[in-house]
Every structure is written in structure tokens, then in C-alpha cells.
Image (cartoon, rainbow, N blue to C red):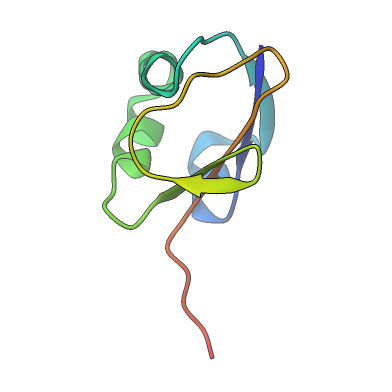
Length: 79
């Protein structure tokens, strides 16, 4: 199971910050999260949401292992 971390407004929308989710790929993980919470799915699909797998930012697909950590990062602003 991959460890999923949500930050900022994503955690607020989901009502949780950390959870284990069974998935073999990032696409499967997104599909599982979408099935559990349509509002979270919509928020995760935003163009400014970044994904880090095992602390490395990525775009596109990734294969996940039982020890993978997947963090969804909302858009950030500040100074």
C-alpha cells in the first residue's frame, strides 16, 4: 500500500492528511481516491496541483511500490 499525504486545502477537502491506499500506479491511486471522494478528485485534477513520489516531483505516470510515499501538493503562494 502506498502512503498518501495531502497538504493544505487538499487535506481540508478530504478531511484527512495521511492514509494508506492500495494501488500499483499513480493512475490507479487517483482512480481509487476519485471513487472515494469526488470533491477530492476534482481538487487533485487542478492544473497547479503537484505530485511527489518518494519526495521527487513528477509529471505523468509512476509505478508505486508497497513502500511508496505519494504527496499531493496544492498551489502555493507567498512571499
